[in-house]
Length: 253
Length: 223
Ligand SMILES: Nc1ncnc2c1ncn2[C@@H]1O[C@H](COP(=O)(O)OP(=O)(O)OP(=O)(O)O)[C@@H](O)[C@H]1O
Ligand SMILES: [Mg+2]
Image (cartoon, chains in turn yellow, cyan):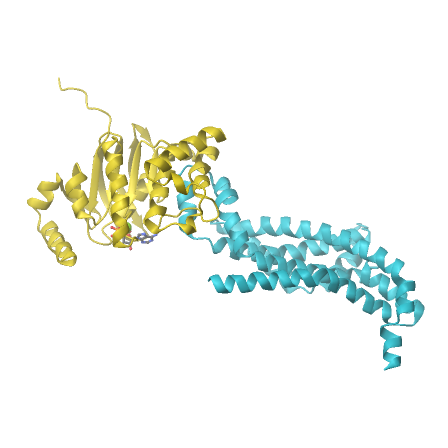
């Protein structure tokens, strides 16, 4: 008898997504273990964002299954979906802080309205999370007064305050000026060290080398290849991955 | 020159007409309060329906909005006041005005709210929904506050239009400001009461108009 498999924190099974006639995802299978950081790379249009967005159903999968801690994300009522979404934190390329609310209110809104936390508890939790991303002193600022890097860190705090089981990052640093990227990556590195389960779509290959447990290469809506960072970057097996890596390193140079 | 002053700016006549006009102004004020609240409530509801993803909800809302924006409000009012008795419903002038204004103002407010909602980026909805907020919570706490802020000058302009438009209630003999002024004019054979009524509108609306253009200038500088 084999040892019982620990339950994956996030499990994607036979995920398909079509937009009209275009098949964007074809039979994606991916298990993310507790505390694992999975880094997703692939050319533009390969379906990376769509896969992430299917995980919390910002996109509706055409078929397949998504489970978070063994609980289904699909085939449930809207109320249950709202509850499940609390367990899946999402960070967008464009931050999407609420511009009419202070930084503190950005971080407390869903705590109060979706988690139904009392105000004092939500405030305390928000300040704790803002401290974690180094922005406690900006609690009363408005989002428009912050730099892009600061806004993204508030967005991370906003997601963390809901105690998610897994965090999804869709190109969190792509909209940032180069000098601001580091501060966001540092927060993500801290998170990983704190044991957060994460899926990160990004072009920051250096970050992948240092922080990822596993790198997944997508192309044409399928996972072409996956492995440790040293396997993927040091010893790519498929021609498509080799071509992608040389193109990316060419751009970086 | 003297004849003009005598016919339009006759202080004595204005003084005589003042009590009647103040009574009329009070009716106008009450009417404004009711129809603005009705119009904003109806317009917000309709604007939300017109922003729905569901075409079966959206299209009737659009039809309503287009229809009542295209009908002259004066005709609408007369039709309601003179037409309802034919189907056995007798309504006092005040109620007829409220119904006509509800239909007309809702359509205008709806169009403003709809464009405000549309001006809020899709990412705002996605961020809110991804954090577990329900569709209603997302509207109430994330989308609408931004939408209203983005169209505040248009909303206020529409309020100014409505205040002026309440003068059409005089055609169904509602004793609001214009009706009272016109009555005073008929009694005194002098147009000064009308000028006085116009001045009363001006005193109330001018500050509001100033605020609006302030807003609009502010917006165009920041954008
Ligand atoms: N709402 C949509 N309707 C139609 N097609 C879409 C939609 N969203 C995405 N697609 C298509 O799906 C494909 C995958 O898109 P996706 O955004 O997932 O790619 P990606 O790997 O994230 O690319 P990028 O690196 O540019 O962000 C693309 O061909 C895109 O045009
Ligand atoms: Mg993408």
